[in-house]
Structures are given as C-alpha cells and as structure tokens.
Length: 104
Length: 285
Image 1 (tube, rainbow over the protein chains, first blue to last red):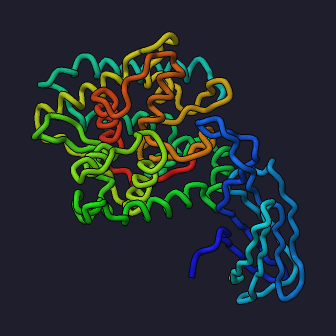
Image 2 (image 1 turned 180 degrees about the vertical axis):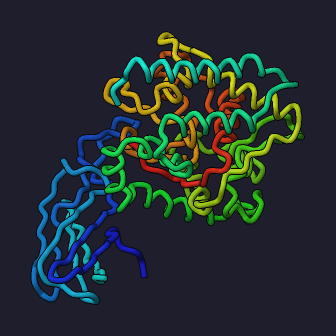
C-alpha cells in the first residue's frame, strides 16, 4: 500500500480532538521557471476536506500562496480514540486522493 | 540579554584567557585538546549556570526561552521529517554495480555519525561524513553528489538520524591529526573578511547576544545537529553549506566546501562537542 502525502498526528483528549497534519507537496505556484527558462506548471493543493464519523470537521481552501509542505493544525469537538479521519485533497490540476488516519 | 559593563568585562577576560591559551599553548608540544574542550564547557557553564551541559546540542534554544518555545512547536512536526524518509530510500538504493552505501562504512553505515570527522592516516587528512559518502560513490563508479544540499544532505541526515543519542567520540590519533586539529582551532579564533570577525567573536563572546535580529548560537554543541533544515534556506543543508554562508556574511572569500580548511574546522568543532549527543538532523531558523 503506497503511503499518502498526509502525515497525521491526531489525539483525543476528553471532548476535543487535536489534529496536526503535514502534507508532502511542492505547492508549485506556476510562477517559477526552470533552469532552461521554461515555466514550471502550477501544481498545488486547492482543497482539503476532513470528515470524522460522517461529519465534516475541517474545510481548507488553499492556493499558490501556501508554501511547500503545508502544515495544518486544528481542533474539533467530538471524535474518540480509534475513530477514523477521512481526508480528501484536490489539486488545481484536478488530481485528488482520499487518505485515512486513526485518532489516538 | 542586556550587556552590562560587568558581563562584557567578564566575557572579555574569559575569552582573552581562552585565546591566550590558544596562542601560548598552540604548539604541537603543548596543545591539549581535552583541556580546550573542558575550558569551553567551563566557560559556558560559568556564563549560563542554569543550562545543563547536554542541552547545548540544541544550540541557541538551550539559552533563549522565547525562540526555544517556537522551536519546540516546530519540532512537533519537524520540517526535516521528509528528508529523513527520502534519505533512507537513497541510502538503501544500491549502486549500479549492486553494492550500497552500507558496504563503505562500519556497521553498514548505521549509528556511526558520532565518529566523524575522523583522521585518515593513509592520506594525511580529515574525512568528514559527507566526504566519506561521496568517496563511497566514486569508489563504486557513481558520480559524486553536490556538497551543500539535496541528495547528499538527505543521506547524511538519515545517517545522523540513525545515530541520534550516540555520544560524539572524535579521536586525534597522532601528531599529523593534531596539526589538523590546531589548524581548525586557529581558524575558529582568527578574524577574517571585511567585517574582520572570527567564529569566536559571535559564537563564544557573542553567544546569546543579539546580532541585528539574530541571536548567535554557542560554539559548544554547535555541530551536533547537522545537517540542518534552516528556515532561511527553506530546505536541508550541510554543515559546510553553513560555513560557506557564514564566511560570505563576514564578507570573506569562502574556503572551498569540503576542502582542507573547512574540514579541519569541522574536526576542531566536533572534537569540542565530544561527550555531547548526536541530534541530527536539526531544525533551525
């Protein structure tokens, strides 16, 4: 099974769950040029949506201003140890994927 | 830290005695690296009595509370994490001839960071870990990698990571090695460049002292956490990349990366960190 691009640390303490995520992604703006002068095409995450137990807990709308390997940290009410986080990301290119992680 | 007349005087007296030691006892017969190392530890201990010795591997974050709290937050999700992963893949990928990095190093290259740089008696020179990695490549008919960043830094980062917690144990086995040590020590204390500053000016006297918007790190434990992901670079870089940059900042013509001068400097600096733990790769501002 190939590893996804999201590295997740999710911890539940009482009624709230703390989530930290680092995405492995170049977040190419489309403004850069390579050594030969050719523009490097834009390739960045546009959306990141995270569900827990069928409920949307985070929606992120990103753009080319977000740096390489973006870091997310958020908390939400609910969630319990062992619950699964369903994380779907989509790029400007249309490429998308869904990854899962467990809450500890 | 407010610089009072008393603290400057104290620092000056101690640094003068350190550099007088450097001059008077800098002959091959009287040089004593262990005494140098203990004198450096004693200096920092007297200046920062509340900081335990093994904390110095964290550089300025051992001395400054505010930047430490920011660094601790960053360390929750270290920016070098991906580099370690990539470094592991690179390390384990065999060369075209079927051999691998593990064949060039003791213990398959795992958990050996604390022994570098080491003295190569057959060629009368200091060998840093990065130099050993590239020479491994050349010996196996692979092209050497660029010294300052990229794949070489990632491989070095992975090897450092496997050695985390091991205690630095640099050896000076003979007179020629001692000359290299002295050479590195001399460079550390010599003023250079248009700004006419030495490493010691910023990293001994100037440790935890503001230099424009920055706080200088202490010389003790300075090399333990390399290669480092510097926010300034936005990526991982090797120690010699940092040396090179530092020299440019002093407006000196930098010595060549992985050349004799910088290798001897690394030899001296790492010896000064003997007894401290490997904690590479590190995250720094």
